[in-house]
Image 1 (cartoon, rainbow, N blue to C red):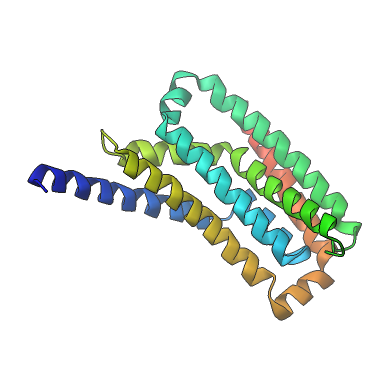
Image 2 (spheres, one colour):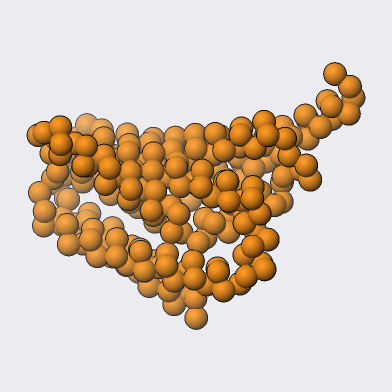
Length: 217
């Protein structure tokens, strides 16, 4: 292995660590994604919470691939696209918040049948994925972090490693949140307060969505 090859590998490894550290800080920060996973795990089922976490991870993969393809340059070149992302994302959060609020009166979803479980898995995954990809702030974070830390020339190995590790970071964090909030006595207490939790989560989602739409002005 030549000195130049070693230097390139070290540069790629450093870029990988910097990107993952920056994204990890963003992942653990409270936001719509955290609220959705927490609410799902606390007032639905552990399985639904885990599938929501997997949806978040899949959404992170979409942003990672987009960032590698030049998302930041596209947003800078077409500012109206970022405004459109804000409006679409805000509308979705308002819709999601309204659904969560209205579900406050509904009983806990059970897994009485295989068909019901499959439907719950699909809905939970879709909710997590859609919430992630409809968040314009997440798009900007990924685009900025990748632009700041990626080396000028990337190898396929680096790109594949980034995509895989992004999924692990995103899905891993939210899976941990789901497991904690759906465990034992904490879950039982959450179930007793399901109506109140759903209303709080729904109200927060509504406010975040309206704020996002307003900011597009």
